[in-house]
Image (cartoon, rainbow, N blue to C red; front, side, top):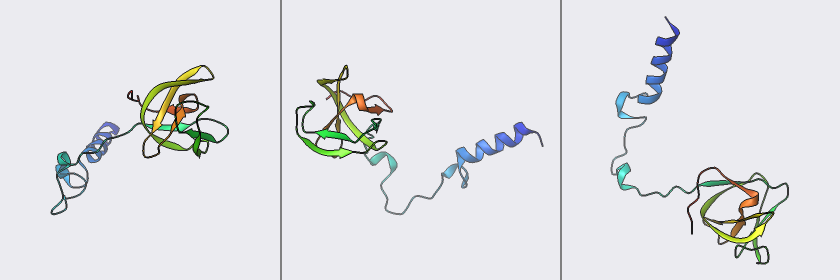
Length: 116
């Protein structure tokens, strides 16, 4: 069999799933349709500092610390705003489900973050 035919069969199987065109799993009885479920996807940010990163009450280094994030930790970013400058960067991210702000200088956003 040619490689292109095998590859086509593999891709088709991945797209359609094991149940043909019906998807990967049959819907559960009584479950809401996918369109009815409203989920907001927040952008993910990754802490890129070498040391623990402080989450602040307000977007400034003079604000109180509410918690600390470890290097490499991933967090959900709610929105961005201008605040105090940190190493030439005035952008701060408000964290989702954590009442606090982190400097964008030390958090890499994987997708665009909306303005607050």
